[in-house]
Image (cartoon, rainbow, N blue to C red):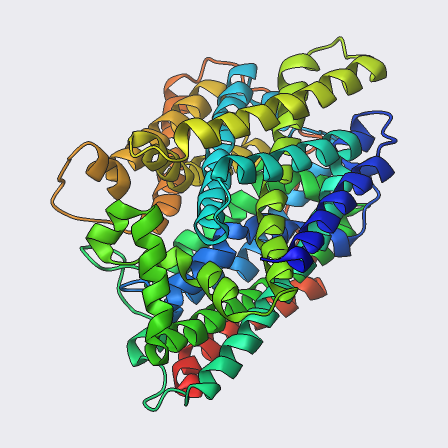
Length: 548
């Protein structure tokens, strides 16, 4: 990087600090955590995608497609279930949740079940999300260190401190508009990489035999059971449906955006935009990975640079695999792009990391204030609420920084446990909210038992946990299925335990219960998303032929 690249990065930092100051006038929880509940679908939809399509995606998705052993275009199967999940959320999740007027979605759970149910979900969310985000920040920082030769300590502090400041000042409005801008920068970075990658590939004579046919394959018909059986169409649609329905509808980081919308129509529009736009964005990720991976084939010095960087900064991975696939995109940027664009792409990577961090810090703060300080009959005054809220932003920002330093580079069980929790918890969370909305037979004892038992069973069947504790059950199940098994186990246990403890009183919040009506399925967004789901399946089936 030269003076031009650093100037772009410095301007970016100053801009975001100024944006936090611009949105600093927040009077109460509705302003600070929900953006005044008057935000439009466009910034909210970009913010929603930016949080999900993080810096890890910008770096790892192309690396998976273009360089990782066993990778390829099957990464696209992660997107198959998104349109269906958006339909489920707009019909089932949003009506009762939005009308309830809550800030922390776990408050709704308390109204229907109990304080203990609320706190179980809230605490697990806070711990897992803070540690997971810390690891994400560390991962990006160490990769940037490898290509920029800037100590990761400084990169972590740049990402974290800037994010904390504008999140602390501006609240949800700063987070959402910051995410929207960062998503635009990230998308521009994708287009730049794709354009230069394709141009360089042609300059080197192109690929005589075309792209590797194995990497072009998208749809696989395996069932996700057994060694090496992953990314099959059935598990990716079924497991992915429950994963995305829970993540976008019942996870505070995403649900808080939905609750910030002007009205339910705005939410439906932003969910539809998310359901339609994610696939083309990820498709560009994947094609970029194919192109840059193809460039490695015709430019051997590119692969050598990746290997040398791996050897210097990741010696263990170099000894095992020779190269660290995640270095493919950063090394490509530094090696082939002109100055100025290097700065823009570095900003793109920083943007993606800051977007995920700002969303986490804001949502963790909202949950902390609402679930631990503003719970009960006596509510905080606006002044005290804002003081604790801003203090919580700083607190959770520091926790995420600490997690990055303490656990990010660890080879111990912490990272593995974080990944395992991410794949086992969504199913039980979704069931908790679904039963809170519609069931009149499940009590809080049954619900608590369902959450705990489903998570524990899923942990046992998680391949990550098996490897961690050297357990061999004799078979493997692809982790995406755990979102489905979590739903089934939680449903069964909730009803069985509630039946066994039928003398326990069941709380009712009938004012927020909804009946799914015929006309709810007739809204135009549903038709559009169903058609788009069919389109992406057909398109993915023929994609290998199109690219070959």
